Image 1 (cartoon, rainbow over the protein chains, first blue to last red):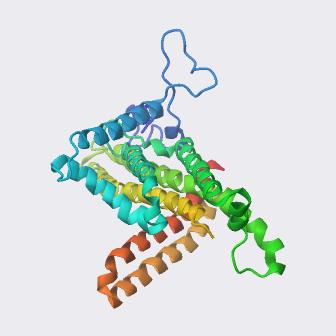
Image 2 (cartoon, helix red, strand yellow):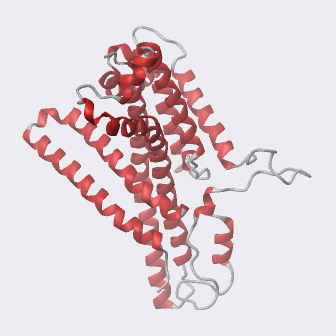
Image 3 (cartoon, chains in turn brown, orange):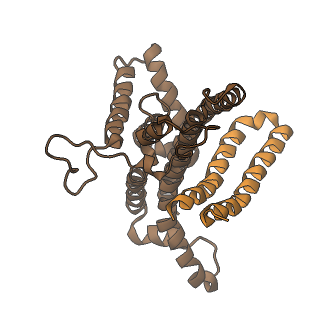
Length: 285
Length: 67
């Protein structure tokens, strides 16, 4: 919720049942473009970049959170786990049994560090959106999921070339086995488009769009509840506006809980699809 | 009448996604009812299917703002 919306709503005159003043300004796409930090004489951003915005700071917070968690839980590793190690084992076994083994098989255990850190990192970046005072999910800007999807794209192509050879991998990826020869001129362009262009794009966009929509929804409930709170509009209308505002607050709380589930689910699905692409690239025909 | 055509487009596009998610969860519930001991793997696949279909609906939502 931008500071401008708050100021406009608090200025004299405006209100839900009070005429005059600006109407309700719904949060727009502008909340996803916070202004970069400027210092002293340098009022512009760093050259060739967007500057140090709230995204960069929260990215550093999420990274340090994940690094600290993984370091703290693996301090004293022993065969019989104590309480801290059990938390780490919970996470690693969850990723191994639900994501890595079903998609890649036992051979895929060497990709487990990548998948575990990917899962924890995306979950930490998503959760930045519901922590109070930090409310901005880092993945709600397309560049962060796009960077991760690019890493997975390069990874699975490299895995495919390494395990199947260059020509064998690309032939196997675009020509499904068992297809009759006459349909290949139609099928091969579709498969190339689907496997190498659309899959990485939707991989990134799925995560971005879900976090974008969720954050916009929470911001709308918060801004709407703030705007509708107008107890000074007389006894009847004041009570009605406080009831409206209370229900907006209730919806905000309920949707925050829902967003937590969605954030976990999207991290899980991103990691699952990454494992699926790596697994499909690795299986030798 | 004012407004944006983007949001109408989003509304039309989400009909398909709504039906799709309904089918996924409905058939998932039927499958769990038939064989309750298969609930674990079924739930994993249900959520995977939900996330994949939801991606298309959310793509429409984001494009309604971007274009």
